[in-house]
Amino acid sequence: MSKRDFYPMFIAAWEASFKEETILKAFEATGISPLNPEMILKRFHTSQPTQGLKEALIHERLRRKRGKPLPLGEPEEYHGGAVIWSPGRVNRARDLLQQQEAEEEQQQLQKAEAARLPTYEDPCAENGFAMQMSARINMNARKDNSRICT
Image (cartoon, rainbow, N blue to C red; front, side):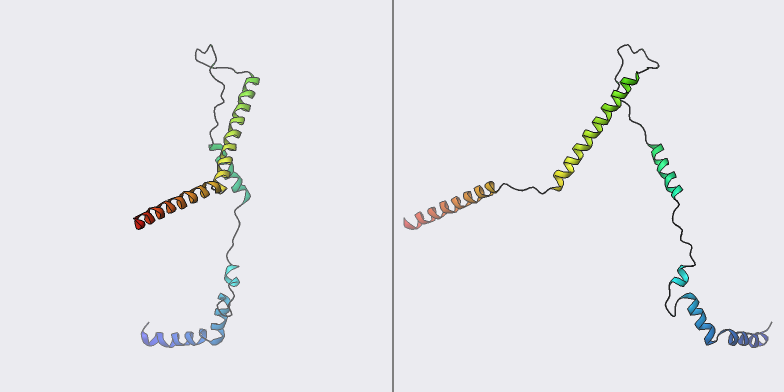
C-alpha cells in the first residue's frame, strides 16, 4: 500500500469517526463531561475481604502462639521420664498462673493510669520556695543598704 492509496482511506475513516456527536459520547462514557466519576468506578468490582479469610488469619495467629508452662514445680522423686500430675494440682497451677497474669495486668493498668494523670506539685512547697527567694532578696537588700550607710 502506498501513501497515495492510504490517505483517501484514512481521511474517510477520520471524518466518519471524529464527529462532534461521537466525541461527546466518548467524554460522557468516561465520565469526564459532564463530570461523573461513578461511570468508571462502577466498572471496578470492589469486593470486601471475606469473613472466612479474616477468621483463617485469626486462627493462624492463635496457632502460632506458644503456651506458657504451668508452675507445677519439680516432684520430690524425679528420676527423669514422664511425670503424671493430678487434675487438682493442674487446676491449682492454672489458677495460680491466671492470678499472676491478672496481677501483672493490674500493675500495667496502674502504671498507665499514673502516667495518664497529671502530677500536681505541692502548693506549700512552692510557697516555701517563694518565701526562700523573698528572704534572699531581703537579705541582699540589707547588705546593699549596709554598704551604702557605712
